[in-house]
Amino acid sequence: MATKYLFFTGGVVSSVGKGVTAAATGLLLKERGFKVAVQKLDPYINVDPGTMSPYQHGEVYVLDDGAETDLDLGHYERFIDIRLSRVSNFTTGQVYAEIISKERRGDYLGGTIQVIPHITNEIKRRIGLVEKETGAEVVILEVGGTVGDIESQPFLEALRQLRNEVGRENCLFIHVTWLPTIGATGEIKTKPTQHSVAALRSIGISPNIIIARADQDIDRSLCDKIALFCDVEKNSVIPMKTASVLYEVPLLLDELGVGELVLNKLDIKATRKPDMRPWKKLVENVRKEKPTVNVALVGKYVELQDAYMSVREALKHAALANQVELSISWVHSADLEKDKGWDIVKNADAVLVPGGFGSRGVEGKILAARYARENKVPYLGLCLGMQTMCIEFARNVLDHEDANSSEFDRGTEHPIIDLMLDQRSITDMGGTMRLGLYPCVLQPGTKSATAYQITEVEERHRHRFEFNNAYREEFEKNGMVFSGLSPDRRLVEIVELKDHPYMVSSQFHPEFLSRPMKPHPLFVGLLKAAKERRKIKG
Image: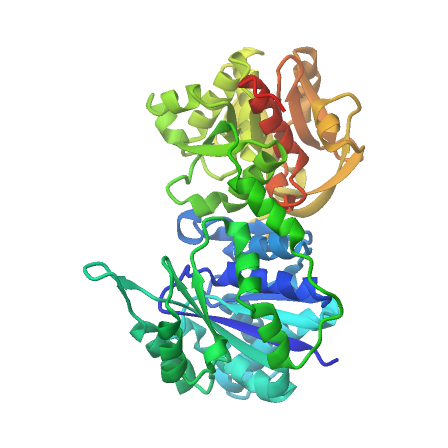
């Protein structure tokens, strides 16, 4: 079978749910027996999202091979339960950097470099790497942004060319669009969708399927209208109301016949019958009435919750495993420094301090760790959340009053957290941290080992600073347990308090490997401890 390509484009507005729709469609195809790979094409000129502000881009999602990628890759991995690599995401910046590098070397023999064919050829080359690396039978490509954006034009032109090169019978264009509602009348409008499809058609692409999104029920007559004006078959306009449960999206698409529609249009046959029962059970569990556990998430970027997308989803997965309803209270760490937000922290059943960079709000994270330690509140720290837990311990248990990280105070006498040795000669900011999958050996009898139920794990990292081993013996004598270490025992990966219900922190980011059906053990352990704190049975 020739490799089949599904191209997802977005219309009207960004954040229309294109990434989730692509991920859910990938699951439907995987359930029908196909090997699926996914790729996100990001039109921005940054080389990758690694140096971008979380307020603009949301979280940076890290893969096994250390690629810093778009958060949509988290959706792909969580829904389809696959492990992606750096070929699964590229940006305009990477494309231009490659072309300019070749031009500087003289690879083009003095020829004029143009968007067509040079840029579009590089885009097609990178798309081809997915099938070569994965051997996928179906490759799903999502074009970031919205049709009509000037940045996305080279990507769309490359897809138009690719369609002719691999054969129209092997390509499917799926356009995900938004149907806005006029507040005064409650009327759903299709005109913006018509315009976005007209923009696509103006560059030579006609969508084969239109998924029309709205916050309310979409009448079939509106779908027929879209089909008429956009030159799409009536059964190829799919009305998709916003789901109340994220993980219901694959079920809704399946019920609407999207899986079979894609197979019919690509003229391929399923090798097995899809089994969506685990997803139905998952959604049923989400909707069940359950006792509530409240987690205070103390972060630096809480104004944009997408900055903690994977953390939020990992908490949801763990809540389902513990049969509790999750309530997340978002606390800005800088507010705690101003004596604000403490009522939220004090009413929480658990505290979670996620990662971050820079000194702003760090003292608030340290205060949150102190509160959790002194009041025996279950605590999970991730990356910077581990480092602030260690700084707090040094200040208030070991009496090193000026203890800090050399990231925030280069002159501190007690650099509990210090720059990794192999990071000290690095000057470039992007893609130069300790990134990707590294092994961690768990120490027997610890809470971490109990949570994982195995002796060695591999987890994804994203950091430059680490625990300073000069303080390891002093910490251990005073009740800190180094429960996870690198195989050579040089790097501290997990710390926990001996005399505490659950105060565990990791230098890595466990949230990236949590899945709806396979919640991450450290998150499960946190919510189990929170549940016990509330004295919830079962």
